[in-house]
Length: 282
Image (cartoon, rainbow, N blue to C red; front, top):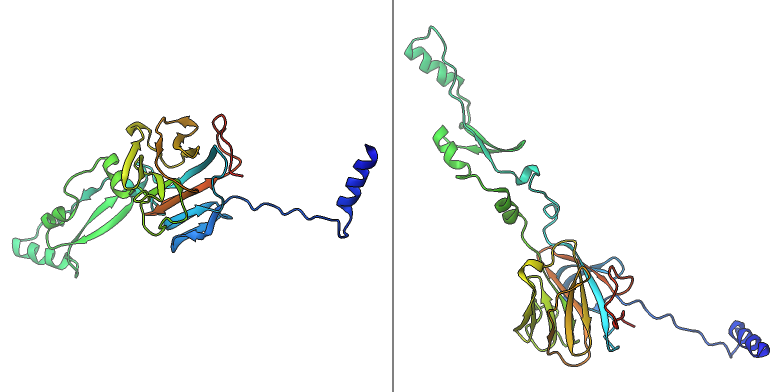
């Protein structure tokens, strides 16, 4: 027994004709050979941004597969991390022009002449101040200045929603026949995806939908299980009990983004433990 073990070790260490080199399996990641023309893949194939879709470089061969995507950003640069209390998000307060001070001892004609002299060469202006940031609005009278400023004070929630548009994204499975330039996916038989509004689509048909109070948000981790029949969605490790099916053939993990959305894929070293029986892509 010891001799056979020694022989095995000797053969493995020998650089002669009996040596067999083991190929290292490539890591599962987003495939730059199968992506939309306006897609950008960074972080060693783990992050997608730009516009369009991308497949992973490995199909779902095993019976029960699991993978994750983390929603990194769903808003344009500079707005994604704004809080309601940030200066640019605050409602405007109007500061109308104050009339020139009355000079004692001047007659009406002199006062009128003095007022004209004190008037600036350019048009009068008022300031719509947003907590330290001023927008100069030019007009010919204080009343026009008032009308130039926002007519009503918006609530913080309305302002956040107006200035932070929601990015477009979707994740699921697809065959290599899918058109990765045509988003959102789920319009044909070649893809089955969950879109950012929580709807699961296949062949342009809504198959299921996440509860309205459990829609994925920035920072959430979405897990996908697939057993060659059903696709299921997990939000931060919790089963959403929202199955969808219908796609046929060899499928790959797929993701698409638009409108400044940024997603990170996770095909191993998961944030959450896969459900029982499911495992990473081989």
